[in-house]
Image 1: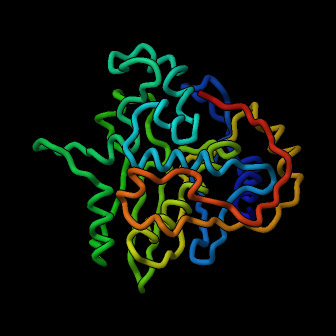
Image 2: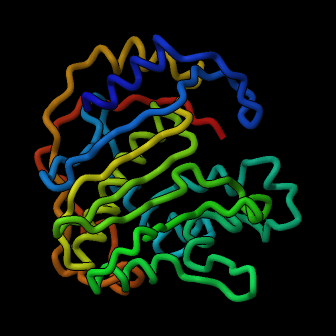
Length: 283
C-alpha cells in the first residue's frame, strides 16, 4: 500500500500532462516506477484504501495462462475485463481480423502459448518455462512474454504488462514483471494482484519456495477524469495491513491450471478495506 500511495502522489506532484490519442483524454504521466511484492512473506498486495475485487484479476491471469482470445471465455471464468476492448474499441470493430462479437484476436496468452517461429510452427513459452523450473533449470531466459509487434494489428489491444521473467536463486523462485503502460487508479490494482499471484502459483506448481516479485512500470499515469477521486478521496484514506492469499494446495500442475482450477480455489484472509471508488474506465 505504501508503494502504491507513494506512486500515485508522485504522479500528481511530478507528472506531465499528455494527450492520449487512443482514449482522447489527457493524463498525468510519469516514466518509470518500481514496486516489490513480498510473496515470500505472504503479504498480498491488495489495495485497502478502497475495496478491491481480486478474483477478477486472478481470473484474467488464468485466462492468459489458458491462452484465451474471447471476452466470453474470460467472462465464463469470472472477469468482464475484456468486454469493452473486444466490443467497444472502434479501431478493432472495423478490423478485418475481428471474427465477431467478443473476439479479442491475438492477445496475451493466445500469443504466448503459441509464439510464432520465423521458420514455421510455434513455441509454447509457458510450457517450456514450467518444464524447466520443475526440473530445477534456469537458463537465465525463462521469459513468458505476450509482446509480438508483428501481431499487434491482429488483436484488440497491445499487451500492457507484457513480460514475466522467472529466476531460480538459492532455492527460491523470483519474478520480474515489466509493464509498458499502467492506469494507476484502475489497472495497477489488478496488476499488483496478478504479479503476486503468478509468482505464487508458479512456485507452487513447480515445487519451489517463492521469493519476491519485482514489478516495473514504464509509463504510469492517472487520467484527468480520475484525478479528483484519487487526490481528494483515495489518498486521504489511511491504509490497513496487508491481507494474505490462500491457494488451494491441490493445484499441483500446469494441467490443473489449464483445466479445473477456478477463482474459488483462491481466498483472501484478513482483508480490511475502505468503501469502493468508481473510477472512470478508458477504452
